[in-house]
View 1 (tube, rainbow, N blue to C red):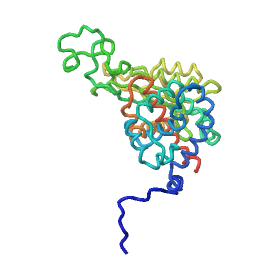
View 2: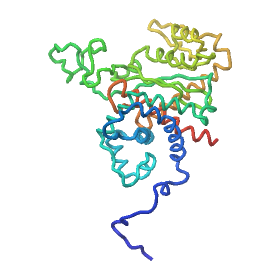
View 3: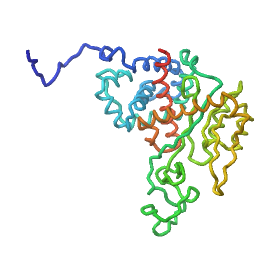
View 4: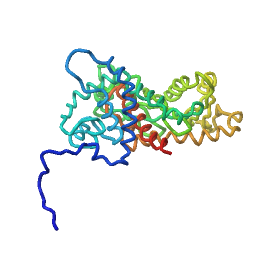
Length: 360
């Protein structure tokens, strides 16, 4: 018998959103883990807000919404608000009832900045890694480090001379045949972004540089930071992040050829880190092979070969982010905003992997 078509459903519904979500949906385990961590952070949230004035967006719901943005690669907060308005799955994850009004995009952005200034994303990452179910999954002695370029939300036309006395034809509209350097030029829309090229023969872009440390047991991200793009940024960031990991015991660090520099290798050894850096013996401009800072004293060990295999796993972190469109080009301007975006992506990557690891 043919069903009768009705253009609209019933006015009232007695089914809870919880019942509409499939029992095996992957967001169920993630939501449970997120709720446990947010409960531990509840006391710290109170210090970020005044006791007077109008109630703000609950930080628990704000952070949950930002995680959804990273999970599903939503390009802007305007689109995120649109999804929250009609997507029942998103409302359930954030904790909104079907009758709750969605927040204004401008108010959402301002409240996001409050969490950002309170370093809530870094604290959430630390709480996640200290969770009783997550801590046994982590290695405390074998790590890998890698970096990636994050394209800034700024165009080449905004890269203009720092000196206000612009020369004729150097207003940013036509840059062919002109020499543009970070020392003399700066983006007017994102002053902290730097012009950088990934390799010889590649185009230069205004970008930042994201850095991540991965533990080698299960491939979870355990640290991350964003810096301005430069030729030495990867090595300096590696030293900063690994110094915190090597406080109590000697650790190993797998790195690619970009980290093969004598001063970097020496710095790691001095801070109780065994550098398992891939040897860079590329030809120099004179046609000779450059001398690697890593010799047979390191490469002869079996652990070096294992680190080289695990090192390539760090590409999975950046590959996941680029697949979702959130680690290829940032959605915000400024180093602090890009850092928040990057940390959210690392948190989202871990939250996707952890339930699978726990179940295994």
